[in-house]
Length: 157
Image 1 (cartoon, one colour):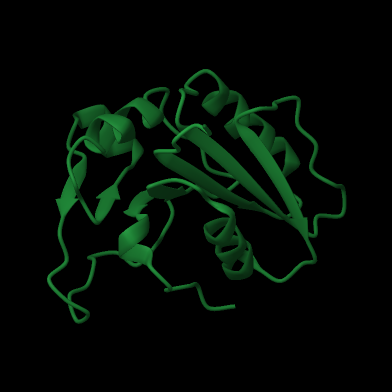
Image 2 (cartoon, rainbow, N blue to C red):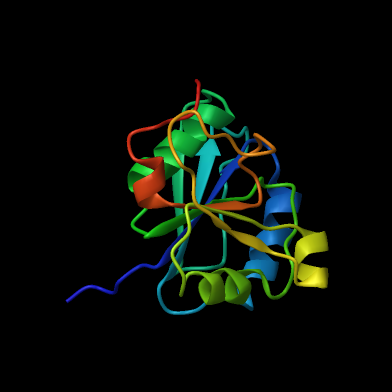
């Protein structure tokens, strides 16, 4: 029987290798059972290679932009929850634990940021009431979405 994936972290990247390496090093110390990281190499000039295996998948595609890379990640993700981090972002050393702790509750969208993690003001209880209900900030970065909430919705390519 295969492992149940609770959280998929999707990282689109294009020619951001030094930043991506630092981000993956940060995530490596946090990895837990039930978490996967998917890097979508969006046609970088130098193919993305990493020393990490097991929890990390690298998928290469022709350069089509961040939206297409995120969409590919969604399609390949196995997690009940999906998080997006840009390759040039860094996360707190408690990023994954904070998400998994909040996943014990049901939410549609969880906002994560350095400020929210440091102040423990993580907003995780968003329950959208319908198609016209909107989030206060439209960025997908540093957010966690319930897969069921994403459904068939995809980023503009």
